[in-house]
Image 1 (cartoon, rainbow, N blue to C red):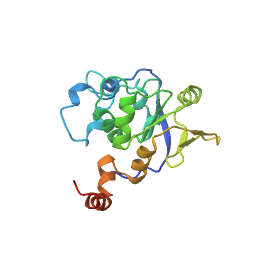
Image 2 (cartoon, rainbow, N blue to C red; image 1 turned 90 degrees about the horizontal axis):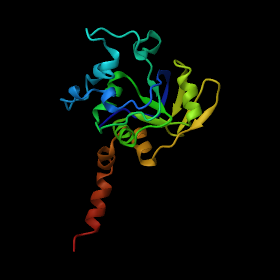
Image 3 (cartoon, rainbow, N blue to C red; image 1 turned 135 degrees about the vertical axis):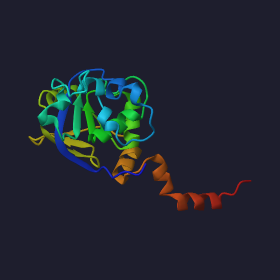
Image 4 (spheres, one colour; image 1 turned 135 degrees about the horizontal axis):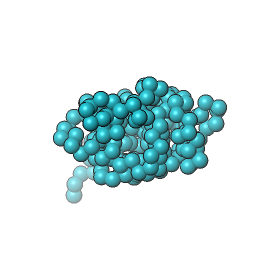
Length: 195
């Protein structure tokens, strides 16, 4: 993957307070017939976003006018649970999101998100609940310092694996990171001939 470096996100939030939003909710299995990332955003949360006739459901939070253009999703606990599918972060990125915040994010989803340039952020439950209660606020996320800053100036540190952070900051995946070090790898191999 070659993506834009993700160093900083300053954007409004959109909120889905439901707990246990699984990967089939994020992108239903019937849309997993492609290996292309482009266009998957139109299927993100498909069964929530649209009525049976295909029209947008005005009751769905992400269809609200004030949610349009939000790049940070704040969700209820256990976001991204269920089956492992890279299509889930692909769909969220194509939908326009750069980060997901929750009090709990499923491990496999978190790993897939980080590998694809979507920043999963786990915050203390009280902070996550406060964000859920105040949709549309602007947050400032600094990837290098692992911090989320609220409009009132309060700053919260979130955990992130150091290697994953490096890949986000450089805009590469694991393979891209290795390819950037090809000459060093070759030099090591040359100096350690097989015996």
